[in-house]
Amino acid sequence: MRLMLGSIVIIVAGFSVNKYVFSSKVYDGVTTVTDIVAIYPVNIFDFKQTLQNYAYHLCYKNEDRLSQQHVTSHECVDSHDSLKRECEDKVFRLAPLNLQNKEEVLNYSKQYTQCTLPYKYIIG
View (cartoon, rainbow, N blue to C red):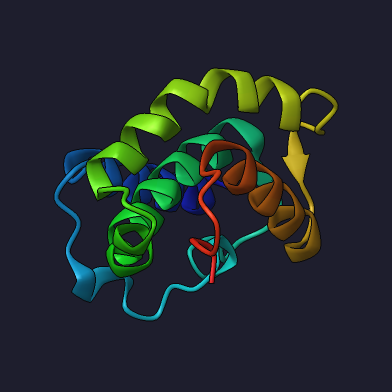
């Protein structure tokens, strides 16, 4: 349990430090949030922080797709920040305190990113 919490704290701290300056090398292989979360069950509070950082990653990773829609990465991040509270309430209203498996994590992740990042085709 300590190892899981320690790992999550390290991941969250790393993302927090680089909130707006993501290194593409760190996320080259990340296609879904389940690539980041490897140990189950996942505490919902830690998962929310991981999702916030993943949303930022999507904004920076998909700059080309966003530019085709006349949206910058910073506008994408700002949009996420403005919708974060509303979407957390909507998506996680009835969520359990711990997500038990990959399917639950992926389901909540998709709902959250679709709510906070309403740009067409941003999620590959």
